[in-house]
Length: 290
Image (cartoon, rainbow, N blue to C red):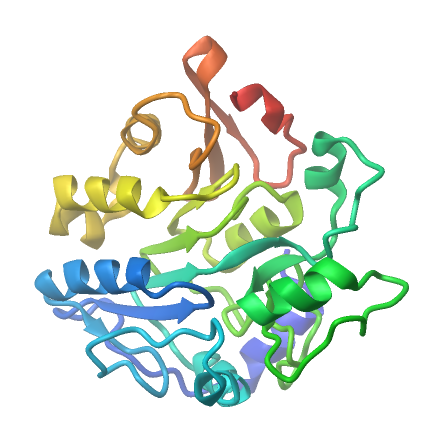
């Protein structure tokens, strides 16, 4: 069930723009770290006649990043607000991803941490070197700078205007969206984040790591290249178990990819060579994937 913030934003009737589900498919990028991965994906999608409708700079040849360029970072509030009005066929998010602060959950086991951590999100390099390493829930301002960008993937408690940490994609359900790429560490490992992605993209294919991320884009690009435009047009027509093994051709401690496929969470269990299917809200013992 949608929370009241989601309902309020939906009723506001924002004026979305894009070419959703028309002949030309669309993509929107949110890059918080190295842009090489997002540029590789943009190049591939443009070859499939996509149009980049990212706010502010979608028409540019390369994808700008909020990593550490101050001229880009200072436009984060403008970009964030504009993104609330975007309706794209696909979304691509890339960057550091994890708990809000390094010390969060340090007294918990891995299973407890991923199932109980309330705040997770994408963030840029200044945030990683500043608040992530030095701040805490008791001292949230330690290490802060004007270049920090942190965007939640686990909460949607804003109503009318997104605050600095709010996710502009968590407005109202993107029921016609085809898919979401999450390129960052543990993008689908946190239960709170899985719940939100499933809530706001109920009919989409969502691809993300349940491990540390090193080069998951190579696996994702290989699958997209193999299946081609039919996959991009109707990704949930493809068998989720087949997709899991295509995305995880061999056991590895890094870049273990999972999916949310039409509201169900699928991930590989290498030790028994099977695919586990659960509700995104269910707690998961992800250590068993290795």
